[in-house]
Amino acid sequence: MALVPEALGKLQAAGLEILVETGAGAGAAIPDAVFSEAGATIVTTDQLYQQADVVLRVARPAAAEVARLRSGQAVVGFLQPLIDPKLAGELAAKGVTAISLDAIPRTLSRAQTMDALSSQANVGGYKAVLIAANEYGRYFPLLTTAAGTARPANVLILGIGVAGLQAIGTARRLGAVVKAYDVRPETREQAESLGAQFVKLKTSIDATGAGGYARELTAEERAAQQAELNEVIAGMDIVITTAQVPGRKPPVLVTADAVKGMKPGSVIVDMAASALGGNCELSKAGETVVTDNAVTIVAPENLPASMPAGASAFYARNISALLLGMVKDGNLSLDLDDEVTKATVIAHDGRVVSEPVAKLLEAAPAAAAGPGGAA
Ligand code: NAD
Image 1 (cartoon, protein in one colour):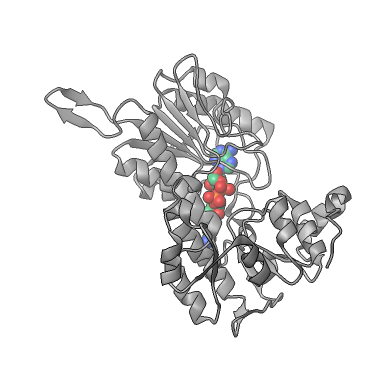
Image 2 (cartoon, rainbow, N blue to C red; image 1 turned 90 degrees about the horizontal axis):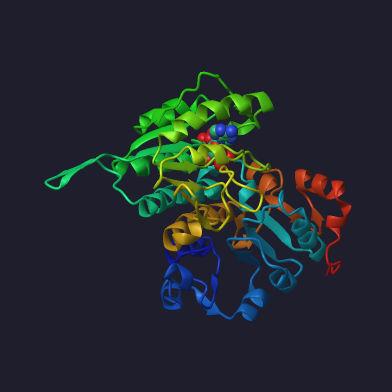
């Protein structure tokens, strides 16, 4: 859910009137009545699209929702314009202003409260560990009881970004022994500060890329990394993978051979799995697979959605912070010279204003063909 009742106060104080589509909060356990008590007006879907100047949402609008949006209206959410530039083209053609939360300049300190990629990765990293603990038929902590001693689980986290750091902290709090690995050497200190042991490979790889992200590894680097990682993976009970390279297919870090080398009962949670592939060669996005050697591979596609209330509370904070920076006297007022506005406004005044998205559309002109219904 894009807003929670607690987030309404600041928006109302800025002169905004909040309309909530009836039933919109149900999946996050927020009844309409709670939104009403917080001062929102509950409306039907038709009323919402007719009356709203700005539509706040979580994911990209589906075709039927795009059809309802009208000229002069703005839509804000995870629009993923680099993955779906065609949508940006369609919204521009309709005269809709498209504002995408996933285009926030994440390293800008004033944009941190707006960073929904981080807030949702945090939820995902936490939930991935709970799923692993649930699938694992043994204990995470060391337990000494009259009926015997249970040794602690060995957990490996691959990729130490926002999700990986949260996964380390969560697995440690459950009492596991945690190792972690990343191709950016600066993550060593961060992992260690949370109580994980950093896996240092003999082949030293520094794949620090632009903006704090990792670059793609070369074929030689990948082969050297794989051979060493396979040995580490074989000794693990749980492997949680979070490694992504922006705009590219996620790197395979756990090969079919590495899975073969794991003990029966081990669990892999692949957070990078999508239709593009995942960090584990055997992952099937959205499914749980149990291999012949009894290794369970879970590949959830939308972990934040499985913690709807917690994820919505963070997301509401992010989207409100972004919106409040673009509102003057109760109206949307876009200053395209502002760094955050410039990065996040993808379509405005009937054109795609984001340079990277416009370039993608130029490269694939067929994708630019929107419904042609500019109002
Ligand atoms: P991400 O989801 O893009 O990737 C997750 C991790 O996987 C990264 O740490 C990456 O280095 C790692 N990875 C990629 N390829 C790998 C490989 N082949 N083997 C092992 N690991 C691999 O990352 P993210 O969580 O979005 O964070 C990316 C960066 O952005 C981090 O440096 C993070 O600290 C930074 N960040 C900064 C801010 C800020 O400055 N305010 C906010 C959010 C994130």
